[in-house]
Length: 154
Picture 1 (tube, rainbow, N blue to C red):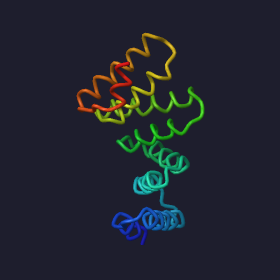
Picture 2 (picture 1 turned 90 degrees about the vertical axis):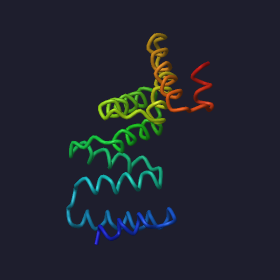
Picture 3 (picture 1 turned 30 degrees about the vertical axis):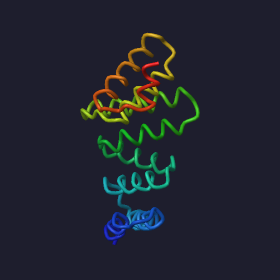
């Protein structure tokens, strides 16, 4: 039944329906004491729908427990970083996201944004420059001509 609810969530056209079906699927998995990659993905799906930090944290806990390193793991670190209050914690999560993306060979707009954010938060001029240069190179490579690229140039 949990898989049926997950599939219904995927086929739903509204965020409310998706949330309802994914939550029901999680409830069933929790009752059955299932803690696997599919549950981690359910938490990730709920996180992207609701933008709630707790769901990203739950997904990360399972990804780490199960030693799963994928794009969603990196994105979860990135999103928790953006939701953190202190620069230190933000940088920690951004660096973890970056490490995962680099291990997986992923070079997308999220990676460029992580470099840009680290450049903004880093204190040392040399380190700041390195992060901004990597962000700039990636934005250009991706053809991202927007305010991020203009900000990075400045």
